[in-house]
Image (cartoon, one colour):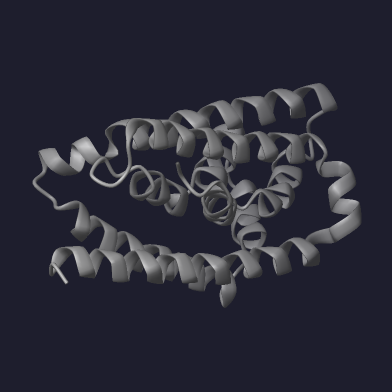
Length: 202
């Protein structure tokens, strides 16, 4: 049995549902409500497909390339940590991805699905949280279920983005994104230390 609360917090941090709201508003500002609903649904389908792909075959790809999962865990922890630092000190998720939204028309897939929802942090977390040697098939299913639940929250928030943005504003979303970055930095550090311990058989 997995720790549902801890798993939820990890995926909530890397997917950042609150930070997706300003991105969604920016990329759909020229669409009507019906089109916005279709864009939100397509973005969630694409995001879920990408993350489930990493859960199912991510570790298989690493094994085929003879890359120890411990090495991936260490490098993944470092990348997650850098990603978290960019959330804390650099441009927040909304600021950075709204800029992308002004340059591309395929809004549902890019930048909404990738990298706003299914970003590199979420992809890495999907692999690390479903390691075959550490988690049973049932636990991996539970992890996938928690991840899909977070994506469902993202979908609900996108559909409610008009009212949410009025309440928290861009500044509120930026603050929440930075808090999530701090939590993610702690998770990344724990992953790196765990990978080092496994690699060196400590």
